[in-house]
Image 1: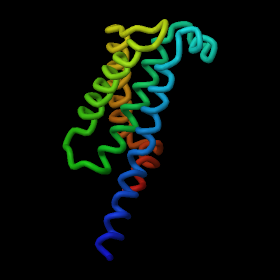
Image 2 (image 1 turned 90 degrees about the horizontal axis):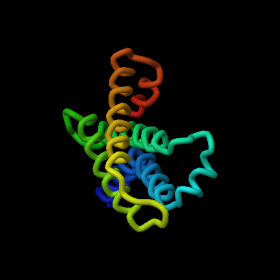
Image 3 (image 1 turned 180 degrees about the horizontal axis):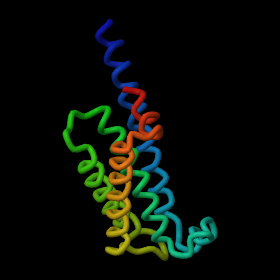
Length: 141
């Protein structure tokens, strides 16, 4: 019985690290399913929705890197976070194929990749500067 309790605790810990990234992926999927007109009405301050791609995938890479660093023994969580971001971007563009007034776009995928890379570079830069923001993220270790 105690082995089961340990397994449940470990699963809960794993989920607590991955939940933010999974929720963010759900938000991206939801927004990806909206028409261009809907998104323009929701985000009038973004005249070019590529900013949404950039910011969305920057945040995704930060969240995925955070989760990887705490749950997977990998020497390069940043590289994996960028790869996961790009793969999710590919799935996002495929999803848009089925959305009225949306279509897959290689330019959007490139912006997704740049956003993921910038997210990882930002966290790496903050870690090197040893800022409080990174300390707060790392305190759960």
